Length: 234
Image (cartoon, rainbow, N blue to C red; front, side):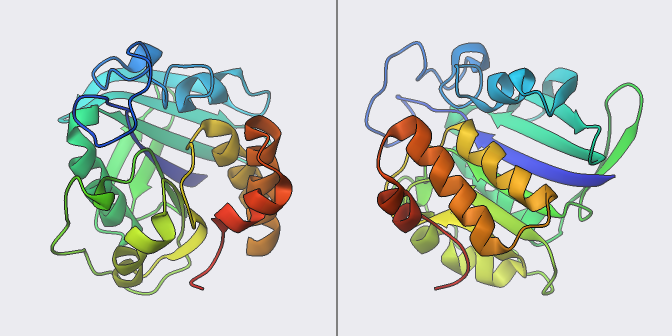
């Protein structure tokens, strides 16, 4: 099966330089209510309710820094999503793990109870969801270098085209969808992008899907959505 790895840095009012959100969704140590995980438009809740995806496994604290790991399966396309929800205070670790995966530097066999999923270097799509910590919270001095590959990345974070550019260049992966400005990285944009990828649409068609989904829920206008959610290096 094809694998997608999603790295989610839980929203954290205390440990991230974000515009504060309500305390119930901004507690980076509580996945169940977190804006990017357990809330209505969070990754776990959104994909659990999707007609196309089935939650096959959920594990608490599967590794250091990760509060919950969920595995979703799309039976129609034989695709797995491994979604890791990182403690909000571990946002730098989450970002570094994303770049390691883009560069194919990690390898792990994960079981959902029925099947063993080979993730890391085998991931065809790698995704980041959360605050862009490189806007001022921290820096990454040495990005992992990888060979040029067909692996693609979705980066749903504010101004990710600018702040993730150098790391993506070194990783060998290519940007499928990333952002030119400030955004709310909720899961409807992620699912729309993944659906286009599964359907083997062009990068431009996938970015347009993302823009339409963002406009549907944010009511920002499709022109803004198309400006915000872009593909490729330019």
